[in-house]
Length: 434
Image (cartoon, rainbow, N blue to C red; front, side, top):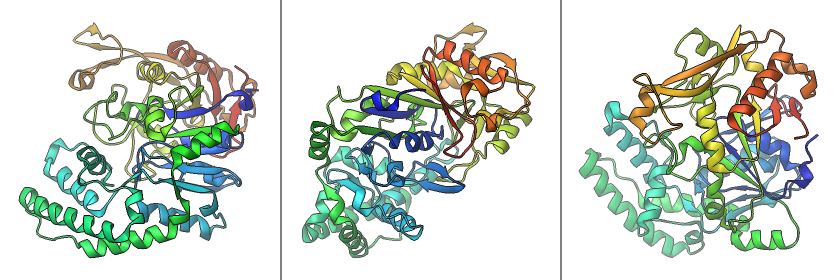
């Protein structure tokens, strides 16, 4: 079995367009780490974990909060929706999981404000049939204000209430004028109401707020082990994904140093997570999409509906071209293949080994979104499996066809499969020595 105690500081990232099952892998690994860190994204992420039949869906809290005695950190690269994370904390409290004592919030995190959510919704509506497919959680506008700097608010600003009120008043006045001019929206937001809400939220989490960059330095110096939990998937990366149909942060492992505030040399192991097939939510190119009965079969058996939005996910064959690209970008050292049980019952299963356009091969995962949208997948078919692998408790116990499928993925992607998931529960996760 793989020795989790010898991995060093580790990052878990998704290799496709999100929803790969990263939450389950982080939950599995947290037992062997001391600190679990969210370093990017915001409330648009959704990590689902099932423990002994109980399901937990988290959006901003690191999955590590589900393991007692572990420290969970929201890093400076996260767009923090403060009311939403408090809702998550209180929801876990009602289930007997009290996380406040183990949670740290970076004082450098930028705040998602109500006007960000409104701007997200209004700008998406204005795009008409050119919609990007945003979750309307305000993530993009929050990061945009971060880059503009003057209209940005950070967690540290909450610690000076009067100054915070003054700044909110000025920003809301500007935003109300903007919404009226651009979108003819005549329902102004109240600066006083927003300031009241956020200062009340700040009082609830103030003991959790700290300089997390200093916290990480001390943790490393004292021998604690860090596990970095990526949100969204690598192909949604703002710089390296299928732009413009991406999210607004660096979603790959290369975002850890900036998003967490640690040296680039910190991460030693990168675990790339992907399903045994490929899914995508919202608009954007998806070469292996199956808009047919097979795609619906995968959607139904895999319960492919968004944790955050509830939207049905687009489903298709495993895209090895995209996975190879993401693996190289992230420097992934191992693979975790999820949802193998979902493909049970299919006579054959497909793997995309290349793309063509106009009858000519494309060189890998291209940056031209229009070209990628027109690309035709080259599909290689392998025998499917009738026996559901859910009861397997080792790689050797998997059906022969499943093992052959995993071996082919390894060969195409170029990285060994260390973990395979055969069901939703924590116990239905197989680990092998690689």
